[in-house]
Length: 92
Picture 1 (cartoon, rainbow, N blue to C red):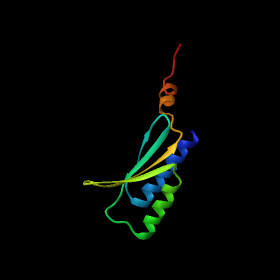
Picture 2: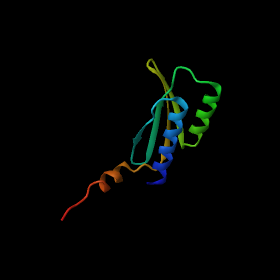
Picture 3: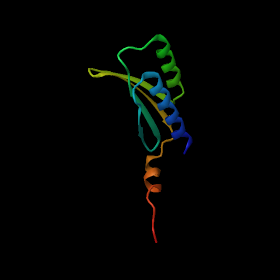
Picture 4: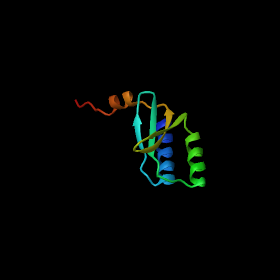
């Protein structure tokens, strides 16, 4: 597993543990984005821990819509294009 993928998996696990919601990831050619829907209320400790987890990413953000709030974090590296090439195997 490449470093970016390992970092994204660890970040997703931290976000899931902090919020109680399942994080999800999108893999792009140059980055992996981990997103999670936030619960309606967060304690101060949880909020600080969440910010500390996000700080480990290369970029992060916060989106608020009528359906709720989501935070996302991106880790540089990705490799979705490479992944699709290596997942197929040739048989002789």
